[in-house]
Image (cartoon, rainbow, N blue to C red):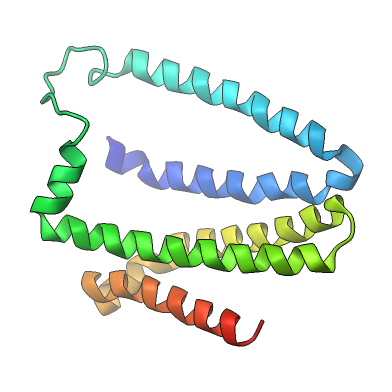
Length: 173
């Protein structure tokens, strides 16, 4: 069931990630405080959806038996399964690189813009373009890349590309 709806969940997340910055691009007209209030209000919708899903799920209402685990179970699995540790590293390193790039991006943006709304609009454009690219790759490219290169090479491609972009951003600000 989860495998069947996963593409819909990812598409919904990407569409939200594309539409969210659209509001930020209009921060001069709408106001940043109003945007924050609106986004805070959407959290209540998310809480209602989660409550509805949990109430209908057999996993959460106890009708299906699940193994009881402790808070350190995930850490134990990482340490005892090298494959999981590899996936953790492959997903964590690009995120660290992404944080460094975002920090550099924000420093440059802060120096370039006088008004908060102008900087917000600029950052929203960058986020929106990133999410449009991600949606495009998710829809058209991921399966093709995995079929052509294999799973291992595909997993190694992400940190390699992220590292190349970081190096480029550091050498040519």
